Every structure is written in C-alpha cells, then in structure tokens.
Length: 163
Image 1 (cartoon, helix red, strand yellow):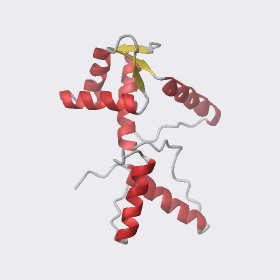
Image 2 (cartoon, rainbow, N blue to C red):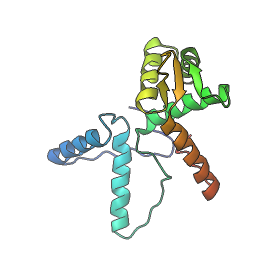
Image 3 (cartoon, rainbow, N blue to C red):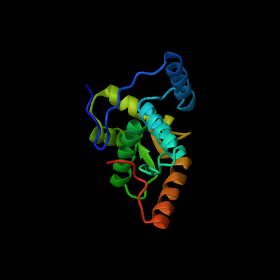
C-alpha cells in the first residue's frame, strides 16, 4: 500500500467501466500521457465542482499548475537547489544539473537521466544550441518565476502547493 501524502485521504470507489475508460482517455489527452498523479488532481477538481454546483463552497485548494503534481514538486526541488547553488546564474553545466539531481532525488544513473529528460520535457531547462553540455533556464520558466513573484507580492500568499 503506498504511503498517503500529508493532508490527503484515500478514497476507494467502484465506477462504471465505460466511464472509467473515458476518464483515463481524458487524462491521457489532457496531460500528454504524463498521468502520474493526475488522477487524484482531477478527481479532487470534479468533487469540488460537484460541491460548488450543489451550493457548497469548498475553496480548499491553492493555485495549481495542472502538471503532474509529484513530478512537478521534484522538478521544483531540483531547480530550487540548482538556482540556490549559483544565485543569479541562468546557464549551468551538465555536471551542475546532475549534482542538483543527486542532492535532491538520488544517485542512480537512470534516475539522473530520467530527471534531466523531465527538466527539458516540462520546460524548466533547455540545452544550449551551441554546446549541448550546457543547460539554460527556459524562457517559459523565467516568465513563470516572474509571475509567481508578482502573484506572491500582490496576494501576500504563496503559490507553493505542498512541502
């Protein structure tokens, strides 16, 4: 049995097989086949929507990016470690990226390879066009970081999902 995340409850239900297949098809389409953790996110959103339609306001969730939550938190930890190890820097050697992955997730070469692929796939880093051993913070990530700073400053709250 998997460990239950803090602040969460397990829910086991039986639903119609056709509805189940439609829902999984929807998840694969919405999350580009990266559905790890997306099921919980979408079920929570569906329950909240249902409760809102019934007149019950829940508003229990903070602003979230719909990228797979567990992977996203891992990516954020890696980037946070990487940027804190070299403040103000936007270009990193492959060895710096690998060291941040080792410090935050693990030393296995397959783990390092997978996280480097995810960092590129989810738009946090991109390889330098001239030297492929250099990673740059992506423009999209820099824009998101600027948005996050403005949002935090204007609302007094934090965008952070979970610790």
